[in-house]
Amino acid sequence: MSTEPQLSRLIFAGVAGPDLSVEEIAALGELQPGGVTLFSRNLRSLQQVHDLICGLRECARQPLVVAIDVEGGPVNRLTAVDPRLGALPAARVQATWGPGRLVRIWEHVGRLLASVGIDLDFAPVVDLAGGTANNGLAERSFAADPRAVLSAARAVLEGLEQADRAGCLKHFPGLGGTAVDTHRALATSPHDVDQLWEQHLLPFRALADRAPAVMMAHAAYPAIEADRPASLCPTIVTGWLRERLGYDGVVFSDDLAMGALDGCGPAGERARAVLAAGADVALFCHDLDQPRRARDAVAGAVQRGVLDVAAITRSAARVETLIREPAVSVDPQLALETLLDEIQAR
View 1 (tube, rainbow, N blue to C red):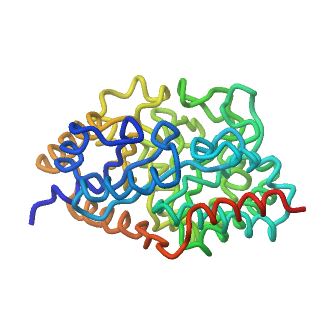
View 2: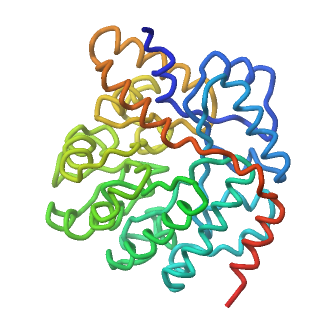
């Protein structure tokens, strides 16, 4: 049996705007990616988002995971649909609400996502607060205390789960304490192995059997292996996440076009390295060209015996677990208004 459809499931892509171009329709049909991540540039209204997702799924010709980043505060793509959704505060504020309220609010976030057909939210962030103001975390972190992070993250996952949506812990094994934003350059963790395991990995360890997905960090961890970023490192992806934590959910790279990987070769080489390290998904967020080149490079690696066919099959099966049934009975506008009411309630 050809591995090409399975290979495509391990590649996530992006599209340019709120409507699909003729070229994108053709490219999606040829690539058949495992998923597409939506950004603010893709969102105009609830009806438009619903129609775009229907178009994406029709073009892909196979089950498709639709993902988005909704954390609250500065990372909330849904504000492009309705600026009032900016009322969902950053994680630092959410952590003060308590688990009960967090569960309720994130269930309503999940219902809104479900109403337009979004399966996966790349949240919550479980990186511990700390490091410099330039590391891209700031108020995106719940707290510096790993137990407070764990409590809040568990509530977010539970709320999304109650709405039958998938969440994703990020960024393994933790960006807390770093000094550089990985969107711009490679960050380096200053922590030793004990600090990483006991503190920064506590939320990941405690939620490993609950989180549908985990996203890897584009950061170096000299205490574990100094030579390459965690996202490309078998010692961290397979050795720590899969084997030490026993994690069997979907493992994503972070966006493979980020500045942290500028010295790691072209798109195809980055994708091959991510999958060889043990991840399930090579994530590209901005177009369809890089994902196509990545798919071709991965196919070549399989043909040369560099990547294992059995591992590709396992990863493709994991990705399919993220696909959720659309909530056709939920009115999107009502879901939005209910979420806003819950956020504003005291």
